[in-house]
Each structure stands twice: as C-alpha cells, then as structure tokens.
Image (cartoon, chains in turn red, orange):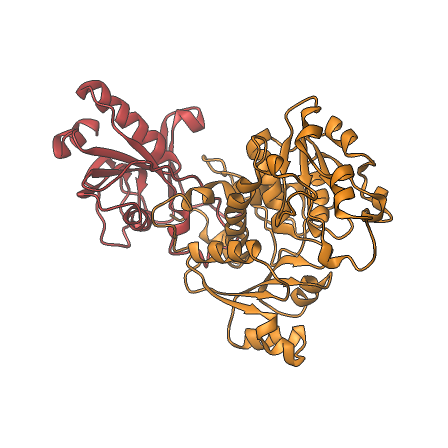
Length: 162
Length: 340
C-alpha cells in the first residue's frame, strides 16, 4: 500500500491522516515505510470523526470522543486518509467534512486495509489492501498489535441472539 | 462511594474481538451538581473535555455536532465569564443559542421561573442553561421541563461546570486528582464554587481543606468531611493547590469581616506568604478577582497561577457537558452498535 501511495501521489507533498482509532496505527506504519524508502519525514495526523457523525442524534449515549491531531497546514497538500475498514462510507464522509475545516488540500485520497463492500454513499477507496466480500450485518475487525497485541483481520459473524 | 445512579442496563455488549473503548457511563438528562455524580461520571466528562480543547485551537473553531439544537441561556444573575464560556461552547458545537437576561425579560413583569421555561419549551428548545440566585432553582426547573437543564450556578448551592473545569485544570498540571491536597480559601459560606469543588474533589479521591474566617465558613463545615484551617499560613504549609475564592461582597448583608484591608492582611494570598511554602503551589481563582483583597496581583499574575488556564478549560468542559447531555435515546444505543 505504501508503494502504491507513492506511485500514485509521489512523496513530496504527502500528508497521511489516520482515522481514529486503528487507522492511526496503520497510517503510522505506512508513513514509516515511506520514510524509510524515500528518505522523507512525512507529516502524520490523526482524525477523530465522532463529532462529525451523521447519526449522533440516534446512537444513544454519546460515543467516546478521541483526539484529533492535525498540526500541519493542509493547503495545497496531497492528503491521504487511512482507515482500517471501508464499509458504508459514512466515516469517510465525516472525515472529508472535518478535513475541510482544516484547510483546502490540493487533493484528498483514501487508503484502506480492507474494503468489505456495502457502500451507502458514493465513495471509493484509491488504495486498497484487500477486498473481501462480507454479508452486511457481519463485522470486520482489524486488530493492530499496538492496541490489540496482535495483527489480524477478523470477521465476526452477525451475533446470534441467545 | 455513592450508589451508582442509572447504571447502564444491558450496556455490557456482546463478546467481540475488539474490546470496547471504555464502558458507557450515561451522565443523565441534566447536570445540576457534582454532589450526585459518581467518580466514573465525572471522569467521563473530564476525559471527554480533552479532545474538545483542540477544537478551540483550530482556525475554524466549529464542529457540526449540535447542529439544529436550540439552547437557551437563562441568566437571572450577572455573569460574564460563565455566560460567554457557555455561549462559545454552544456555538463551537454549532448549536443555536438565545440569551435571556432576566432584567430585560418578562421576569421583570413578575413571570415565574416555570412559566418562563414552559414558554421557551413551547418554542421547541432542547436545552436550558440556567443561572439563578436561589439555591435549588436548577433542580426545580429540571423536574418540571423535558429539556436538558444545566446548572450554571444556583444561589450558594452548586456551580458544577466550574467545579469540573477546576478539576480538569488540576489534572492538567498535577496529574490524577487522587490523593492531591487542595485547599479552598476564603468565602466558603457564599461560594457555590466551593461546594462543587469539595464534592467533585472528594469523589475523585482528593484531600480537601477549607481556610477562612469562621464567619465565612458554613456552620456545619465539618460535615463536608474537610479539614479546616484557621490560618492561611497553615493552609499554605499543607496544600498542593490553593483555590482562592472570591469575597462575595454582593451577598454579604451583615458584617462578616472587619475590613477588606484586614481581610487581605490575615487571609489574602500574598507573595510573601507563598514564599514560605514548602513546595510550589498551584494557584487558582474562579474569577472575578478582587485584586488586593483575597489575592494579590503578583500572585494572580505569578508563575504558579493557572487562572487563565481555568478559563480556557471552561469552554472545553462545557462543550463536553453539552455533548454528553445532548445524547440520544439509550434504547437506540444497542441498535447502533457494530455499525460504522
């Protein structure tokens, strides 16, 4: 994925922004790989989209808000949003809205580890680690060793009510 | 420990590969005071305030979270800091706000508090932030209307958001509240800030003391479970944090103190007194300050003063409270789980 990002957008003007929570670790890893190969110091950011969700009025007790960390000027940069799983596209929609509050990047791209289909918005990923076909209702969890102690992608079938 | 009010029923969730980020602790419909909050509820508000600090540092200081929500700031008492702080918090969350000052409203024609609020509700508002001179006014209102009610100070009872921002400021500068030694100095009798601080600090495990002339301490102050210092020098010797309270001259109907000068000499926090402290003491003040009375200028503007940090934190804490109280219906929470 790192190679593909550099191939598509170059390493010059790149800013990697991970979506809380596991997108942040993934984007850090990609940034490290690019830094090593291209001898760069890519700016990294973290985005928490909770406050931009379109379902806040209906989700009940408020979800925990993570931190947003974007100390870079985004104007005229190429911003790559990194997330673990692309599903409905609503998270990405929120991230796009939030990024707009930080400046006007030259372009915004999307890189995801897993694309599981099931889009509800006209959003697509530019760089995809793996496409999997998972029935809606099932959950795809990406585990990263920084938070979960191991690296894995787990498909959790729709929970059977007992 | 106080029994947990409204413990989440069935919020435990089902087994999943990804552990929940943190347990869901509902804060409830209203924020009336810190006395009835649990440690985990207070902790949730403080933790939620952290990410909100960043929003006020942005160039575009606004997130769409409370879009379409109408909030009325009902202020029956004068206020600059608290009202503006609430207003910033509301606007940075994209809520629509209306300010009602009692002096310029029908209240001056004799309308009752409940009638005023019910009329506002008839215009479809979502939240009321109320400051009132009578202790218990916020609770009174919360019991009678469906909107969320936030207490922005009721008489000499509580001022919960001030208590919360004080907790957040102490945590920012000194780490976890547990075990910290905090002394509230001065006019404890008239201070709603003092009550919110005492309850909030104790809930989080701090040691709390008060220091002031006996005439300005409540009669049954011992029942709060706080240490009492008669001399400010003893408080300075003991404390890690001094929260210096304002001498509320407007609430003093009788002669509580001989003179302001004497008060400053005996109880005022001065540089000379602080220099004898065995450690660096964090200096806080809820404002507005009577400079040269309860606190000297070179202390208020000195290196250990975090008074302006308190003000900055006030906006973040209020955003957190608005965000948490505006939460949707609990029964929908389960349905939304697992979706993204």
